[in-house]
Length: 254
Image (cartoon, rainbow, N blue to C red; front, side):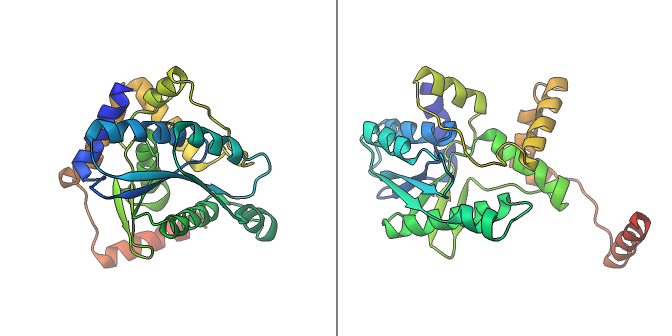
């Protein structure tokens, strides 16, 4: 756990994630990342000796087989306050709207429910367990599907709820999470979502793994690019030429 806590401190210090008096809701889904973050946060509070509090918060979107009771039991074992926010997101996304690509809407609704619950519980921050590979996958997806270079931020101010979103695992490789979970025998519960693993994010992960086979330092290089936006060297067409280019491209496709 020493390496986990060290990487957490590196991220938290770099981006001022945790401050005196914070009350943080940790979003816990039951997966390995969030279960480890819940476990690690208690140790980290002792490690940095800052006066802040945190709780465990789970959004139950209504899938049969979701292990909310087991997640609550783990939080109780750790002596951590836990809350489960029950919703009907599953019914809305899959049964009422029959979304063909449900992940975006489901994620948006799930986060909204979590943020609202965090505010109600008196929290000023929410912590997600996004790790290094999550950061890089989002980077890949942005330019592959959106035509822009972007990824999520380590710290995000949410204007609607006045909540600050933090990601203490942002520098942590997934392999270190897997190793820590195994070593500490932290319980992990599979996501019962029927489309889990069949997403664009899984494709992005495969691409990153392929790049890493040819260049073992590919992930380091991608992270360096994300952290050095001033080094980009791109061109931009004048608006008239840009319009002609994309108009011609559209005509060619059809």
